[in-house]
Length: 99
Image (cartoon, rainbow, N blue to C red; front, side, top):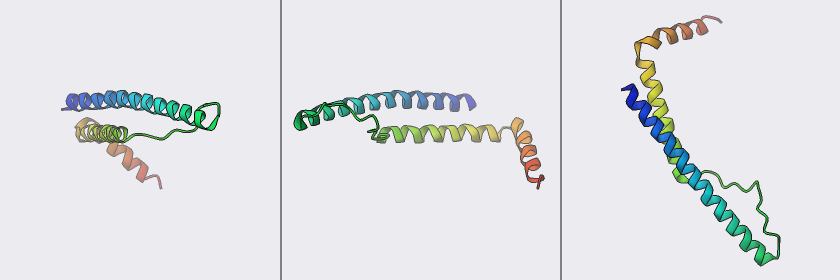
């Protein structure tokens, strides 16, 4: 079960990175095209504004959400395993008893 969760999370993260790189390339190409067309119309230099980042695309949000859900599933699987339950319970009890 743990291996399946880790494989799924790894695939989701690698897909997120590849989609993120493609989206960044599309944004850069669109920004250059817009910058050049605006410059030719306005008689400007056509330089790109470095602070003009539009943000993540919808696909990037979806992949990010999928990655977060896979990570939460991995943490849940770890929490349900008996090996770490005692350690975490002791840590929480010691933190609550400090006050």
